[in-house]
Length: 259
Length: 356
Image (cartoon, rainbow over the protein chains, first blue to last red):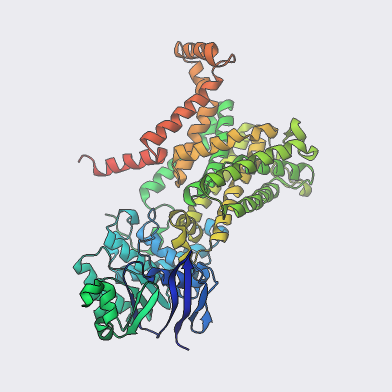
C-alpha cells in the first residue's frame, strides 16, 4: 500500500468508457504527471479523485483511507486540493477573498460570531487576522502583491491561473491536483510556474499530480509520467522512458509520426 | 495609495477617517431627524427602515448567495404574526418575542432552503412564490391568526411587564428610535457577516458552486443557512412592521409585496448593503409618498390626476406608482444593471481621477 493509490478506477458515460480500469500509486512528495491526447480521460480522473464524479468501479485511497463516495467538500477536508482546466475562481471577489476562501475549512466563525465582530479583539476578528497572515505568505510566495485587492474577474488569464494555484495551496493540502496550470501562460510565466511547483513540493510538503500539455515543462519537472489514451493506460515510468515509448509517440503524433 | 500596516485594517468597519466622519454625520442626522419631521414622515421613515432590514436580508440571499426568493412576504408575515401572538397569547416581553419570531421565520427559511438544493432559476422562483402564497392563505384560514379580519398589534411595551418594568412606546416618534437602533444593528451585523467566513462562502456559492465544493464548502449547509439568515432578517423586519402598522391582515402580505422587495434590491444593487438601503428607501418612498407629493404640485398634479382618472383609476393617482415602478425597473435594467450602487461607484471613480 502506497501513499496515494488509485485502483481499478473506471467510469463510463453512456456507452463511452471515459476511464477504463486505471491503477497507479503515487509516492509522498512526488511530482506525478498525467499526459495524453485531448479526451483521453485525464480531467475525468481528477474529477473522480475530487468527488465530482463517482466511479462505477475502483477505489481512491489516501494513506489507506478510501475516498470514493465522499462528497467533494469532505474530500477537500481530507487534504486534496485542485485547480480546474477552465479556471473556476470566484470572479466577483478580490484575490484576497479568493485565497481566504481557501482557508474556509480551518475557520470556525459562524453567523452569530461573525455578525458580532466588534473590534479587533472579538473572536471573529482574531480568527480573520490569523488567517489573513497565512494567506499573505501565499501572496508573497506567488508574487501576487500587486493584484491583492483586485477583483479576479479583471485579471489576466495567467494571473488567474496563479490565483487558483494559490487558493489550492491555502487549503494546506497533502495532494494537489493541477489541471493544465500553464495553459494560457507565456514562456516566462511558464518558467516561473515550473519553479513554483517545485517549491510547493519542497516548502509545503505537497504531493503533486499534474496534467499538462507542455512537454518541455512535463519532462523537466516530473518524477514519473503516466501516459494514457482513450481512457486506458499506455505506460507509466520516468520521463525518459515515457518519451521514447512508441505508443506515446503514436498517440501524440498519429500513425504516420510513429512510422 | 493608502498604506496598510495591519491585517485588521482589511476588515475594519471604518476603513478611513473620511468614512468615519460621514458615518457620524449620517448618525447625527438620523437621530435628530424626528425633531423636525412631521408625523406622516416619521411613519414613512419607520416603514423605510423596516424595509431596509428586510432588503439587507434578502440581498444576502439573492445578491450574495445567488439564490432567489419571491416568497419573502411569507417570512415577513411569519415575523409579524409570531411577534404579536407570542406577546398577546403567551405574554412574552417584546424583545424575546421579536427574536423568537425571527428564529421561527429562520426555521421556515431553512425548510424552504431544502428544495433550493435541487432547484435553480425559474423552478426555485416558482417554489418560493408558492411558499409566500401558501403562508398568506394558511394565515387567512386559521382563527388563531385572526383569519381574514386580521390582527391588531398590542401596545408596544419594550420593558418586561412580569418584573413590573414597563416602557410603552405609543407615538411614531418613539417607535422611530426603536426601529432605527434595531435597523443599525441588523445592518452592521450583515456587513460583518459578509466580511467573515460565512459571507465569503455565500459569495463562493454564487460565483462557482463547483469550486466552492472542492475547497470544502458544504453546499447543503450554506445554501440552507443563507435562506435561514435571510428569513431571520425578514422575521425581525416583520415583527417591527406589525407595530409600525398597528393593524394587519393576510392581504397585507400579498405576492406583490414580495415582488416589491425584490425590486428594492435590484434597483439598489445586488450584492451590496448600501444598495439594499438606498433601494429600500427609494422604492418605499415611491410606493407610499412620491405621488401623494406630486398630487400637491400645482398644474402637474392636477394634470396627472386628470389623466389617471380618465383612463386608469377612478380613485386618482394610486396606479401611477405601480407604473412608475415598472419604468424604474426597466430603466435600471437598461442603463445601470448594478443599480443605484453602480451609479455611486461610477461617481466615486469619476472624482477619484478628476480632473483627468
